[in-house]
Length: 481
Image (cartoon, rainbow, N blue to C red):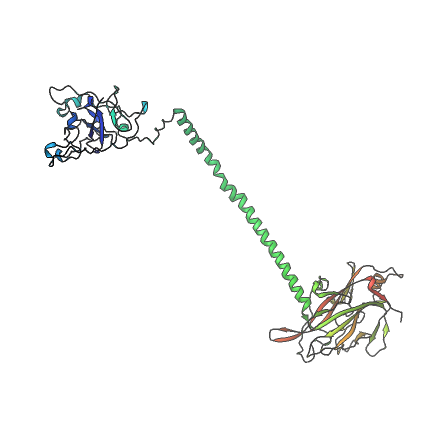
């Protein structure tokens, strides 16, 4: 069957129809507009199509009046029209006419996917004069749906109605790459979606309880844990600072006693007031040593030499030495002054004075720790200030009343001892019979004068507490005197 191409009056693209549909209303496959095909094949190209308007669509709100686009009035200048032999100036043979290949068209719509053209109204369209055609011409056949192939678009020969019930879907383009629209949801699906929305609305009040749980339960617990952590950190930090202060306290303490200060230094009056617990607090390991191992503290070097069990004698001012009723442990120390320009007395009779609970609130810092069961405070000699008219001064034989001064670079052996007048201490240390005494470790805490310490722009004499560790096997037995 012969096909007749002609341009669309709206988009200007070429479309093709069967010759039997000439003069009828057809739908453009590109712009989906309704146009009137030419009455004859020779008027399809290069001639002005019938300018008669098309009947309006059933719904004036959804469609517009379709007017064909004008074609060039000078058919002789149309490059698509056949060449006239009389216009050939040089009598050449007819040149081939330029034919524009039809643009690629979307594939034909098959079966139920074919878009049916809108159905024109029955009575109003037939009464319009411009839609009736010539008086002797037969009434135009109803529009048939068009089909498409790879090169042209032809009208479908089926007897489908020319106008669908709803003209709006027919005006929408449908390309080959698109998939058919999904069918509307079934009533069951709609009911299921409504049920989901209703269930979501019913769950919202239960979900709103979560912030109240966080505010009333979780947040207080979190704040409590933070507070406890901060409190524990502050306690730990306070303990660390206390240890540091105690370390500084044991390392640099005020200088008091018979001869506070050093020669060629300024004499200062510092009170020796401290808590009784300071005497038994743990010493830092940096201030502890063992027998034969030297330890330097300030300008003083201390080397513990030996520990002996012996009977000591007490010298009372203006009297002969008198022995103690019980044996004592004696610690001998080698002391050396490392200062190049001043002298000082490392030991003082005030440091290892006689002490009993209730006699004085502040115990001496020189004491012997017998394991973890007993402590021997001070020594056998009472201490009284110089110039006390009511009491005579006392000291242990082998030491001096005013202390032993060490000149710069001088080295000398000195000692400290336990109280030989304390029967309880003698029973713990030595026992009633030979070999019944304490067996274990000892720690002798000794307070010494360490030289000058600078505070700001001034130098002050200071003291320190060192520790000497030994065992019962290190104790030597001396011959009775």
